Image 1 (spheres, rainbow, N blue to C red):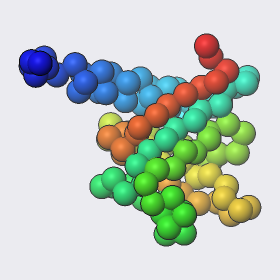
Image 2 (image 1 turned 90 degrees about the vertical axis):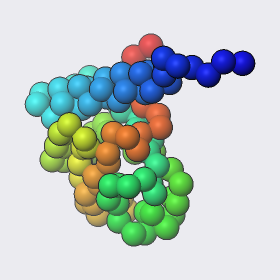
Image 3 (image 1 turned 45 degrees about the vertical axis):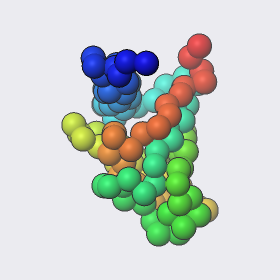
Image 4 (image 1 turned 60 degrees about the horizontal axis):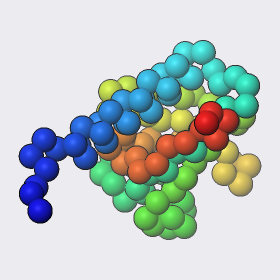
Length: 110
């Protein structure tokens, strides 16, 4: 079997990460309306991921966050995004590089 010299996996990964980035930029600028809910899964041990230690201990491999009703101060740049979410009634800041993403879904959109 021949190796993929074009690098389709990398091209598709980059395209999907850019799509997630664009969605997050729009939400940061305009808010999240309607029934939208974003499920974002990322590698917790990836370089550049910043999450509270207790979350890293609880989720040593992957963590799925939901951006829907209770999120604050979403900031998006070229390489990562940061957001405050509530965990056990405490606001915690997370910083996630787009390279750490493994899954993205908005169940409200088919």
